[in-house]
Amino acid sequence: MTEEVHELFQAGGTEQLPDNPALIGGVCKECGYVFFPMQTYGCEKCGSTELSPKTLTGRGTLIASAFVHMPVGTPRDTPFLVGSIQTEDGAILRSVLEAPDDAMLIPGMSMITKLVPETRPNHGPQDLRFIPVED
Image (cartoon, one colour):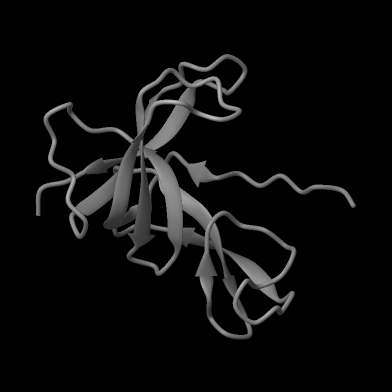
């Protein structure tokens, strides 16, 4: 089986959030399940293969976060912060977070996407992160 590679984001945002990167996710045509990233293997909820790309706004709510001190298989400098985000479109994803050292990350707080310079070799010029926003 050949693995398909899909873009994860577009630098230009959506109509709702034009100044922040949009995520390239997908939606199941059978049950309406929204997911990220786009894939063509089948719906995680109902198993249908009727999937189509969907642009997600890149805005969501923090579910949980944690510092990573001993990563497995990633050349990223430690420690770094990861979080689970539920997008306003309904997808749940995990992402590296960008937050000031003194930021109090609280489940339920609003988050948006941001592009930052990539520090890992051979990964392109930019990396996508989620950052906290003031409501």
